[in-house]
Length: 21
Image (cartoon, rainbow, N blue to C red):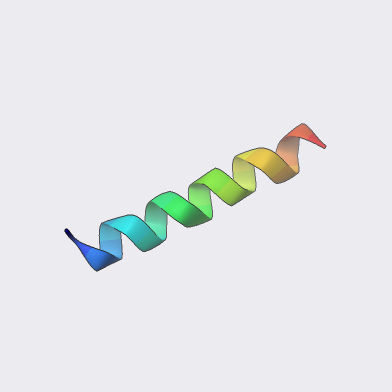
């Protein structure tokens, strides 16, 4: 697994959740 890819994906996922609220 690419650790950098996983980190970026997690950040984007969190931003999407924040934008929903």
